[in-house]
Length: 352
Image (cartoon, rainbow, N blue to C red; front, side, top):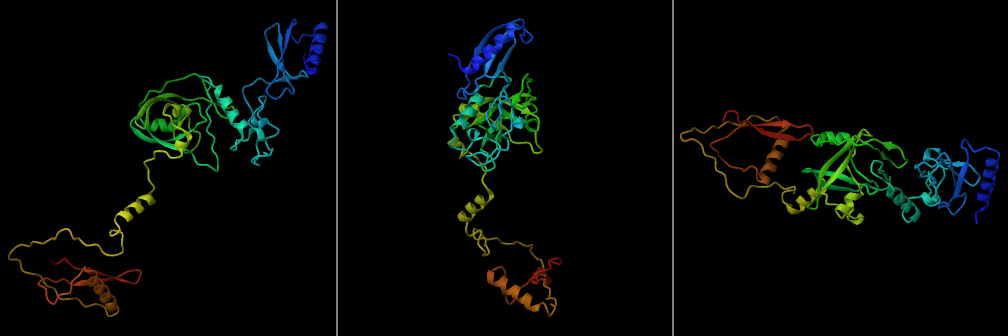
């Protein structure tokens, strides 16, 4: 039992055949009807002419596009997102413009996640899909791996079918590795093609395991070359799950963390008190029969004398200087006024 749309199409086709109008072909060999996954509404029909040409039409006889490009606004395959009339539609789930509820990628929407999986499952060699979707509210997932004995931080992209790196990154670190030319292209989310420069096979080491991974070399698409992308096959090769990527083995420690560790381990070093050498004593040796040099003190400006006395008292209190009544060696001091109003006491050792 065919539906009414199919009956209407069959009568129209029969009338055209009887009138000699076969749409450019001698006859119509057959009509095949099939339903889509949209619940049977507007089920497309495929007409096969004797000349071998195929065309897909809906129940009203209107031709449908059979392109592999799928709109991420409403999920239809007969146009891309730029041509979609619902591009400014607000989603009922996340309240963001640019897609319908069934295409929403917010957590908990099963249809959106299955749609992406179905898209990726259809990828073939030479026409793989490379997705790198960035969320403004989330941070990228990075992992430090060893690429040909170089420790490099890479970004994990579970939506990408290939591992990739920019041409600048390849030229900087791996230009000595042979670049294999390929015939084919990659496709981004909206279906736009990207032609890679080639493939470079690198040795990837992670958690003491080493695998050969092919990296697609892509022309730089931005002013700052992004880090290499590791695709989902890398996750399966190294048994890496999403929960593990939240806590990656990143050897880089923040500078503030290092400072806190050192301050807690050596509190005396970072205190405001003056440190002293208490592990051993140092004795200065001088040549025998050398006459001691003694200079009288130079006059200090009257305005600076209170400040000089304050500095000397502080040096004696902290143990840097020691007060004595007599000494065989003596050198004059020269006070220098600093910009903050304090005085620096300098010694003149030029004559010693």
